[in-house]
Image (cartoon, rainbow, N blue to C red; front, top):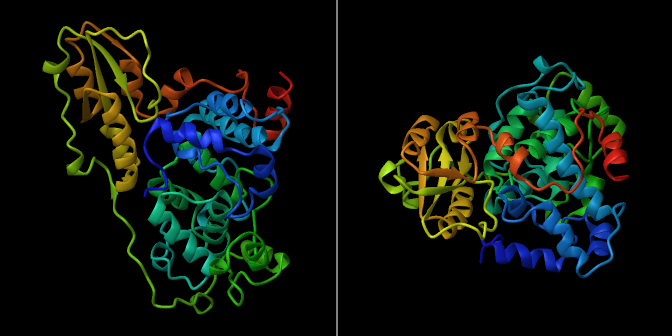
Length: 384
């Protein structure tokens, strides 16, 4: 059985199962009461207001509760993305070392889960197997890659995004910057003791390079040299990295943009980040078309698991699903009577932030000026 059934019903069931008090108490543990709602939120099966409203049907939840606070981080990352645009894909400021000190390629042993550090190998295996990682495990993996192996945060963030079902460009890349120290005031570090406190025994990493003090880890993070190969003990259990696809796997049976399907008709466009309920007001004449913009996927490939997750829900919603470049999609829509859902401008801008900024319901009031501190942003929005 899949961990994330690609249905809105599954998302709503997850909301109903949320226990805010238990979440607050145990969320840092890999087997804690986390919600696992993120793939559904990323792809618009549900919105953040729907999540909070659904939880409040069963529990008393205040704005200052930890559960709402953590929802706030997701909206804050979107706020930064909207104001900085492509700037989030570059270091917001210099980190522990200059950008030039880090490699832009991920070492083989990390990609193949054979570092010999159990927490790292288990994280990579879990990511590949499920398309999901607990946030604590994501932080461990990012910290190890950046601060010990000297992999540039951008290389790691791009790689992880491709394998995640919930890969959100803002949340993913800005979280990596937070770990790297390019989006925060200090590097995030962890050690074997931290792993043993929050992870099952298979993750424990006694005797490995992370089995040391935070002072020593800070020293290693500030040393331009990566952890030497003699400190990275593989055990011969390397696994293959799943392929990332820049276009839909052939068995998903996508169509090329086709004006014959939509000529003279009202069209409602669905994209991979808008997989919630369709509007009730759509007429019987409306053709519902799902679109995947090729330029986006060429830049940000997905795992087969993610293509299947998204396309399964999109198939449920739409009459036909198109994969093509922005110009071919726009050309196919020229003969329509009316296009709704999102505009040609959204198609041509490629990055989903432009779609999401206008179409995604927000949990908190929007701030016109950019806030570079979550604490300042949270103080403003939580007081509203």
